[in-house]
Image (cartoon, rainbow, N blue to C red; front, side, top):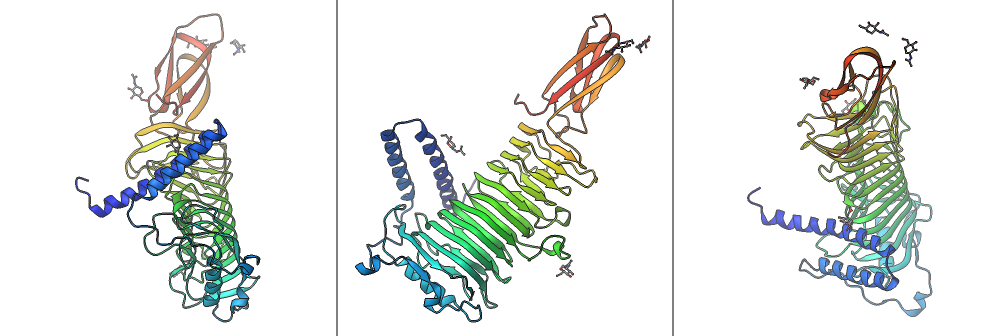
Length: 486
Ligand SMILES: *[C@@H]1O[C@H](CO)[C@@H](O)[C@H](O)[C@H]1NC(C)=O
Ligand SMILES: *[C@@H]1O[C@H](CO)[C@@H](O)[C@H](O)[C@H]1NC(C)=O
Ligand SMILES: *[C@@H]1O[C@H](CO)[C@@H](O)[C@H](O)[C@H]1NC(C)=O
Ligand SMILES: *[C@@H]1O[C@H](CO)[C@@H](O)[C@H](O)[C@H]1NC(C)=O
Ligand SMILES: CC(=O)N[C@H]1CO[C@H](CO)[C@@H](O)[C@@H]1O
């Protein structure tokens, strides 16, 4: 770490910009609620200025600058719906429609600038490329003609990669070359069936803002169904993704490969999405993403698959709620700020905490249902193959209901009845972390009229020992907690 190459340094700088940017936004939104309108406007101005400053950190000017309307006035009255068949696209899917689709997209992108979106983003005013319910064969990725456009939609049909499609994404919202501001803003890809024909991926979104992927069915990808890289606020909702068309219990399931969705950026949301075949359902490597209402039955963890993989050791900042892990697990590396709740885990699906540097901090696993096959699988499992977790704080694994699996928690209670001078409550089967009790509460209820002295003697190795100075018949209640910050 002593020497750092200039390239790596530049890369780190860019990364810092995007992380910082997303956070500035969360702050300004929060400030808006408690201030006057004028203050809010001032705040917004300052915020915009801060973005401009950030955007101008790097030297080259934007490659695309919006120009005023090139269209004659009478065209302004036409709605901007570009029907692909009028560009010669073949809606039967027999002949190649690449050039026709690209021509329709290019015409849409040439539309007048309505001037509403981010600086350096041309507002196409809601222009639509309409697939008219046809299915189209394409032999290269559909890339927008230039970056810097927004308020635009492609919708309503099927797109399939031909047998000579090069490895790539069917719809590619990326750009070649450098750009200092966002590539695209508010682009909607809607009501599309995308068949990658085992030639690559479905949709790629890079360095863009406020992108909607809605009601899409993406199949036959080899690498990734949807890739989101950089930028923020790509919303993926009401979508179905699968490498192979199957409804579960597929005899080739062991061979499923690829990733349904890869989030390599911040502040995105995946909502109401089914991933029915892929080795990894969702791979998350960017912070502050939300996953909600997701059903993963992509490849059973028993066959080596993973439902959701959180590869953000040290700063996770992810929420997974109301989801259905169907024989697929969630793996989190050194989770720091992770919330998993109100979800259903079926078929021995569990949550694996994988130690990288031994950190787990700010983890909530609460109010979930686990249903297993009586194979003795822990609902939350520690993978300490790289070393033990030794920096543990604010971990709350509680209030989960379990059937046919081993309950693991960070809080536990026990009652013992007996006659004697020593009571031992052994929590080692229940508690998540070995040899960690941060807090004990106990009550000794004596049957009779004596007042014995009693004391807590030992709480190490998840075993609580309570002693009395004389033999008594007593009920002893013990509650322990591994979660409390010390
Ligand atoms: C998985 O793929 C291998 C190699 O391509 C093949 O030999 C095997 O039969 C496949 N297994 C299943 C279950 O499809
Ligand atoms: C409790 O133990 C003592 C000594 O071992 C014995 O004398 C007494 O009868 C026991 N009491 C009960 C209620 O079992
Ligand atoms: C207390 O001890 C007596 C006699 O051993 C027994 O009959 C009674 O049920 C005990 N009460 C409780 C609350 O344990
Ligand atoms: C506490 O219990 C552990 C075993 O659970 C034992 O190794 C240790 O010596 C005990 N400590 C004391 C102070 O008794
Ligand atoms: C994820 C997060 O909380 N980011 C930022 C949101 O705003 C607060 C308040 O200023 C910042 O401290 C956080 O870094």
